[in-house]
Image: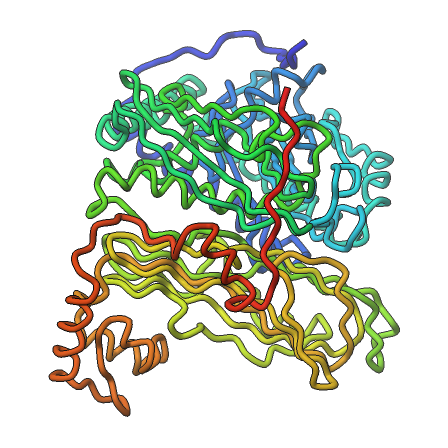
Length: 626
């Protein structure tokens, strides 16, 4: 049975006309409340992943569960359809299990808090937020074991439960949950912060309803949803064709030696409705790289890519979801069957952004098409006991999200060293060095790692970590085999690499996905992320801009030749540049392909050892799907 909302005031909310200025005031009030949720969380959370990097996603929804303001799209309606319990004023629900909330969260470290908002006995809205916990128990510190083969190995599974009942904390339940994680103090503070953020949003909703009236508040949410519906209806008509359009990209490997895994999507339009069909995607993986993709989450990805075409000032929300149909075959990488492992889902999540950008842009490559570069959200884990003097052998556990290169775009160069999620920030090196036995010896962009183009791809980052005590590290990254592809003549970006130089001088190239790597005090890890693909003909880029990039350390003098530009001792040689560009243009001929993948999968695998120092993955053999 679906959930039952218990109200002491059964008077239904009415839909009324609302003046446009009132809509604007309430809309901005809700936007501010959503920002205030982040502020409360960041000031009261304890783990660096949430407090410093902002790995959280807030939302305010109407009483039907449709996100009105937020970041990650609403999950409430499908959640309520399977939550068989009464929900009353003062209840606060907690869960982290993707299989029990229709992938509202897509792996166990994301803990989701959901608060029903009541006013005068009536249910008027929802507030919700999930944050990535530094640990969730399971096989490895950080709870993201790449070699997990089922979800039971990834830590504690919390079904939808009431953390608070009618305003009373269920302390026994909380202690049971915290007993199963390694960083119980961090988790306790982070969870309290999530609750505080949701309660803050609830308070702001009630204040708005008190100021303008319950019916006006309710009706304004409807107006905001309708705005998005109308805007996205126009957008879909512009960017989604009636004829089918297909694109394929690949997840490099599963961390257990198999790969690559194909992600295939076909897009078309029927009437006003956009359809995305993932038939042709590889079956689910043996490891944790599966991504249980919630259909509404994909709709949110699609909307966030396109809504700004109509009006950048519109508050993005769920109002347009009826205009999008997402079809994901069960048993595939994007809809694995229970109890498949899910903790390493970030790799496929990042690839979805590249695929979506390609599908939407290939019909208008000069106006809408980005290169690849939203390719991953790299993670580093480092844990052990701090044996330095005065540290009392305390347990430490670092989880850090890395940054890569954002792709070149029709409007300009891709940002250097940026995050997959625009709201994420880097953890300051001073913070890491203060709280963890690490020293950051290098933190810089990698010259030439962004693909050459009329608009250069963003450069990746090179971070050198000096370990000060013995411990273990885990690495999650992607784009080490396949390239972040370029478009419209742009070159692919550089791939990611991981190299460790031991204290004794020996050197190892590490896979992009690995667990349980022993490190000793004095070992140095070079953690290099990918660069974004280039956009447009590199030979058409202003030579002065290339020379400026050389002066800024973003392109080397040797790398400038990819643009046909000659820079010697920092000085642009105009005559030599003109001659080199004429020669390169003649040898290359006209640009005929939209995408530059750096070769076929077979070609890339054939030169894998030479280029990456690693053996290529073995093609997975799948059992027939029933």
